[in-house]
Length: 509
Image (cartoon, rainbow, N blue to C red):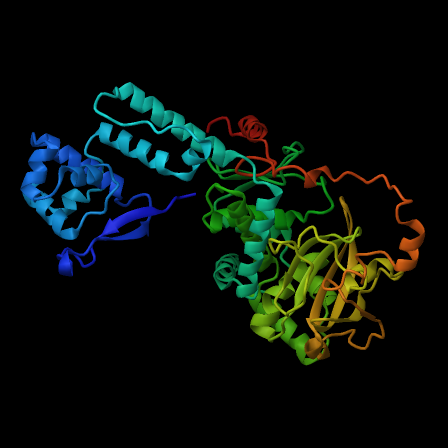
């Protein structure tokens, strides 16, 4: 992750500031100039001209101690003083703010100084190394190498579950602010569909392969993908490796299109879990934009809305995708194109929220960080009630009265390798008139998450009998205690991936 830092820019373009005002500190990228680099450059120019601090201070009519602070990057100079320095040294302001350090030694000193003033170094409680001319170059180089390696290892450490939840929360807030609609990704997908001539109907495996070929990728189906991967892309030789039959949870088209999405969207190796998660959401969106193109999907939904027959299962069947994919895609267009606010839930049979999205005011349970993943959903909600419905062929519909209003939801269950999940789409009562299933008699009332007596606490009559007498053997969810797997791609063993690519790489590459 690129760090921002304090750098200096003139208050007006090259002109002296009124009243000798200080330069202002602003955030800038790693390419910019900062106080430390400026100070080292002033010191280099002073010594290059054979001046002592006293000599330079006399010519600038200032105290040597003030110049020392400037050269050590601990004092912001006035623009008028910089103009004086430029005149004394016979250089321009651009020379003082040059991009490159004046020498290799200066570059090393600048890097060490920045590291020692940073939060990582401070957190270790190490003493500060005093930089001086007497410090040998090999010592400087060793210190820089050590600091770089320390930074690399710290950044490579796994995200904690707390950090993962915060990243999820931030991403969900972004999705809510955009109504879960990303027109720039839709546009990229449409360019590819136009390029291969796909205009309507489900996206076949053949057309998906055409898209890969158009982008310059060839495909290989292999039986031995690394266990932690769904696909592996050889970016050097532009080969995407896929496998068949490993999991019923994966649509091979979607896996391929997600792999292509990283290329089309210009993703680079993620530097933290937040970036990894964001890339994953964007590539999922990209794949959905190809499987269910915006133009035809919106037209399909508008026709269904006009007929007051909106149904997620119809969207699923029209584009030959999973119910979950259809539900996600509905949230992309519901607000932007149909004027309908909504919420989505994927809930495990244990009642734990796996994924969720909302922009309709529904109140999900959340922890102190705002994260809802891993929280238990109310037993009265449609996403829990659907597990007890005998008819699994058709979707289940229910009205739920909550403290945030009445919501109508449609849900069904799907089996995955990790268990049974419910997938539900809900809307406020005002929008239910557009949906098939609005005439359902099923209705419940929920006081969650505000009132713990709703379902988070056992009924009083049961608690009176059994409280203090029950000792269940809990199934250990060890993943809740562990940090996120380390590495740029959490859970993936890079050695295993590299060995795989080495084995399958073209022999003449």
